[in-house]
Each structure stands twice: as structure tokens, then as C-alpha cells.
Length: 456
Image (cartoon, rainbow, N blue to C red):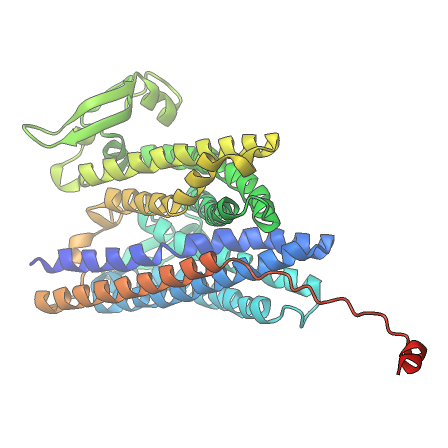
């Protein structure tokens, strides 16, 4: 088998599995900031129980996320040493900052949040979960800064066959950084919102009078609706426009545009076909809309895949399908959250069993949408490891043996199956058990010592 392909498959599996957990961590942490603030300001015991219970789910998710994130760091040196040698002067800084400035902040305050309840003041407890949310978001910032540099490299020069840093600020705040950061973080907030809302909906289907579940829905549904809108606009729109201007071959693959044209249509649905020649089958499209969305002019020319040499074109089928399925899921999230918000406002959500069931079943789909977005971004960048600078085919380590790579790939897959199964078992067990109930102590009976003495 091809060594480069095996390296790519292993890294895709490692990153893909890890990427199931940070979205929940980021989104749930920010929701817990709201929950713990309400517990502090209102003094209601139900918010304290909500924070304690969802905090345990956050801890489980964070632990598995850390365990799955560590192998990625090692793969840069083991499987991608030529890539690491080429970009090490630039890529090392954001990765180091993520570990020192973000991970330690997040993990340290998570410990205070989990074990400091009733041991520190309420204000400090809220501050602890706030710092967890900040730390997880800063972690996403540094990771996305490094990845965005691979998409739109800036602040560097090539010297002696290596990329050397000339401007730290230009490299970190490269052209695609902020749209990608906003789009990704909003997607994480949507994932956290559905995680909380789906679990609350499950509890409410068991007990329509569950006060904790009702309040969790009142928090998570509006939170998720706002985030689901912001994912698409302004952040998703801004990112798509940037790709159209700075990565035109990726944009052509994302939109299934095989030929350059003015009045380019926006494809809503199609099935990519490779034979007898590349084309889209069963198209549903909006005329001129792609030109207008990308360049603000319906008559603007959009370059298709035919404008680029075959060796520089990304894989069209996977890029197109992953992007369009991500968009479909995003529309579903906005729809179900808007409908849930309407029923919440009307006071009928608690008895809308169909909507509650939909919220439960939608829990994993924001995570799938994150995976599809990552696939569209990374597969669409191919064949470049660093866009128009360094090819993926030249990035893997020399002297790798295909058989050893295949063995480690299978071993990683088995470990991840076990780890994923353990995570699901722990989370599902917690959810089925439900939050801890408030303990009602029996009221002490009044005693009259004189009456007891007379009776004796």
C-alpha cells in the first residue's frame, strides 16, 4: 500500500476521533458559565444541581478529549517529519502556546470547578468555570491559527528549503484566521447546546414535570439558536467568500463547478459523477446566485475546476458531498431550534413529544457537521499540505514501512473503538441515572422536656 495514503488515513482517523470531544467541551463549558451564574445570583438549588450534573459530563468529555489529543502531537514527528522540518519554525509556536497558555489554564480551573464546589465562594466557583470556557476557546484559537496558516500562509519566507517566520502576528492572524475561528467556535456552541438540550429533552420525556430539565431547555435552546444563525452568517458567509478569493480551486470543488462561467449557479442538490466525464447529476440550482454570493455581482466570473491543472485539483466528490451535507445539517439545526424556541415561548414545549424526540436524536449531528466541515476544509486543500507552498506527497517521514503503518492504523482503530464505547457507556449511564435529587431531611419534632418528665 501507499505510505503517504496510510499516513493520511491514520492522521485523519486520529484527528477525526479527537474532534468529537472539543466541540462538546467548548459549548458545554460556556453553557455552564450561564448555569453557575444563575445558581450564584438566584440562589436556587435547581441550578446548583444542574451545574453539578452537567459538570460531571463535562469532566468525562474533557478527559477523553485529552487522551485522544496527545497522539496527534506525536504523529507530526513520527509520520510527518519532513512536514515538521519544513514548517517547524512557524507551526511550533501556536502549538506550544496552546499547551502552555490554554491547556494548563483549562485543566487547572476545571479541577477547581469540579472539586472546589462548597469549598470556595460562589463567585470563585463561577470564575473557575468561566476560565475553563476561556481556556478551551483559547485552545481552539491556537489550533485554528496553525491550521489557518496552512490554508492561507502569511508572515514567512522560504530559506534553505524551510519556511521561516518573519512576522509572528501576520502568521497567526493570517487572512483566513478570524472567519474560521468564528465559524468553528459557533459550531462548538451549537454542539454544546444540543448536548444539553437533547439530554434535558430525554429527562423531560420521562418526567414532564422535571424542573431541572425545563430550565436546562430554557437556557440551551435560545443559546443554540443564536449560535446556529451566527455559524452561517456572518462567519460561514465570510469564510466562503474568502475561500472564493484565496483558494479558488477549493471553492470550485466545494460548489461542484467544473467549468468557469459568469452567472454561476448555486447548486442546492446534486450527485457528483465521474463518468463518462465529471458532471453533476440531478441538479437543483439557483441561477447566478453563486456569483452574487462569492463576489457580490451576479455577472462575476467564478473559476471552475477546468481553470486549474489536474495535479492541482482537490478530490471533488468528497469535498462537494461533505460541504453540502454540512450545510443541510446546519439548516436542520436552525429549523429545529427555531421551532423549539417558538414552542418554548408558547409554553407548549414540555408536551411536544415529537420535538423533544427530535432534540434527543439530534445530539450527535452537530458533531457530524463539525467532522464534515473539517473534511471539506482539509480535503479541499489537497494536494497541498501548505497551500501552494508544500505538497502533501512530500510531507511524510522517509523510511516508513507500509506494513508497520497498517498495523499501527488497525491498533489505533481498535483503541478508539474501545475508548469511544467507554465514553458512550459512561455518558449514557449518567443520563439514564439522571441528576442527583435534592435530599430532604426530616424536620425535627419539637420536644417539651417538662412534658416528657411528667409523662415519665
